[in-house]
Image (cartoon, rainbow, N blue to C red; front, side):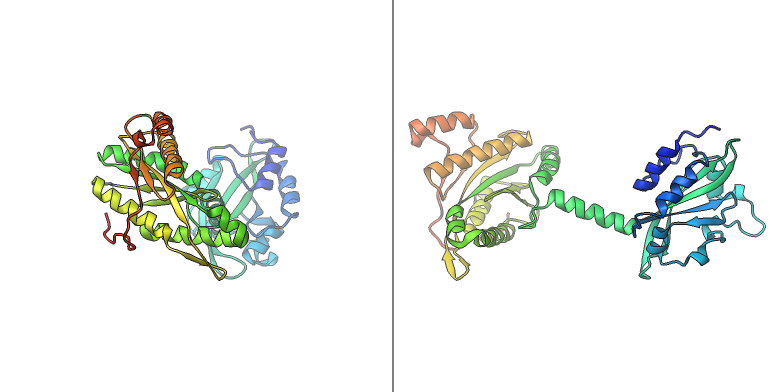
Length: 358
């Protein structure tokens, strides 16, 4: 049985604490010094390593393992871990762990133990057989990974990639992953999905008069209003700057859609107090409907963006639906004859937005 991992690969393995698959054959015993060298440097509380002999008795343990688990060196060295112990009267060949290891294969499992703080923790344990020159197993490298820390890191990385840090809303990257699936669901259920592209009017003035802190406050307030005025099933996204996008799901009628959009737009128009100043702001919006205006997510966003642009040019406080014809042609027509442009929805005269949910 020839090893397929070189000492350099084992060193990289220990450096990243990233192990190969279970089906990988074991490396040679030349890897052990590299593992020991790595394990004694750059202590970490998220991963650690041990080395045991062919019977499972621990002969070496890394400082990072001791830091991670809070165990004492003398209680580990010279002992066989419980998960490798063979029951009295039993045999290694009857234990799944030993069955895998004796074949020269890597074994991975999850163990419930505790951190150095005493708090319970799940660890991913990977045991790698080390082969001698004659192909027989001489020792095992045990790689421990704190799964709780790994999960928290993954959550943090996911949040950084998908959530806007200022408002807490999903960002454009989240939208790019979520919207295609929502379009497919809409088509499958023979439903309708409205894509509302919203741009704030007067945001630059707030930044100029109240500073960037004031602008941030405004964006947070508007984000909260968009969430409260839309439905729980809808998705509110901050695209960047003062641009937002709202996906309105399961639209049952034109009347229901109009009522919902009016409620959202009205929520924006209410004055906001920022650092002692009463600020009034409005929004312009364009709305594309899936599937009648398209079924490609980028195309729907583009069309709703262009409808918003046209609304902002002609009536900043209004919103427009994308027509069945090309939005580009509609914009061209509107410049020549505004009366032939897309249907324009002006703000309602009454102060209170509709309370009914769609």
